[in-house]
Image (spheres, helix red, strand yellow):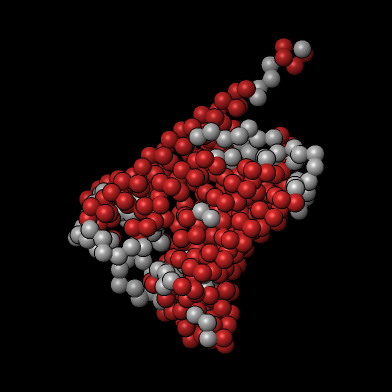
Length: 420
């Protein structure tokens, strides 16, 4: 992995503002990306289970708002459920359902729009971060294109209908904000952003691993963590108090085994069952690994935290290491998990790698939403690319850690050098 050398101090390198042509191309790329997602949302049926889940959640909220998890805790195949997430996105589901009812527009199309807009917002934040670190306009436009036109983003938000970009937008904004200012209010603002994302999906809380070591003092770190953890806890509190047994699903949900991560390595044939072209069961080593998923991934993240505390890299570089570890040592994997880490790779300057990763999983993305598959389609276009993605993630961890160690060694100033 080869990243551009970051400019120190976080100030823009250019002595003049961005050109008018740049702004035109910037908003053209973002506009094309948004329009393309809207067209996907209103011309395709998307991933039926997830999209229908929003409608089921809306009905449950109207029936008994603080009993929604108990009402939906009836899915027959563990560990899945209709809503294995915190309640933050309820605030979008209800008004969009009401708007769909009032206008006659398709709710399963409208519900994809928040993710579409979030992709575009992430693209803008990423290019602004790159500008502040002295990147050229062409680099910033490429960064925007990788997100606004990137198939890994567009397929999830515009077609599938998952909300990962909605949850990750505040996390990206937190790293962007942390880099932009050192004001006293920074830990509160970054904490609110991370907390808001965590209230939608739990994974944005991992951004704390990247930001806490960059705090100027233990007091600032405590402020950041308290707000980032307290906000989603407060949002979830009414359901934790009043809801039924199903409220534990967001805390115990681990994804599905066999579609990626370590569970795919232990059972490469499992994707055939997921795609309905063969019968495979989760047993043996795969079941053992899946049952221990929290401990395996948790141990990997603790190791990342130790590395980050040791070398104190830029938060964006630490975030890259966090998500590489999630991809490599997560037991399960869905394609939307790429949305968690790709913005940070691009912000850190790994544009070619972000392009290569999206190209690598493009066949898997197509196969995931295709019909009429045969076993060899799954092996060639899904299993092989996903194993290659795992290998690339492990290699990426090695490269990033070596780069951090080398940077730490070269930044040490000897007494003789200081006196020269």
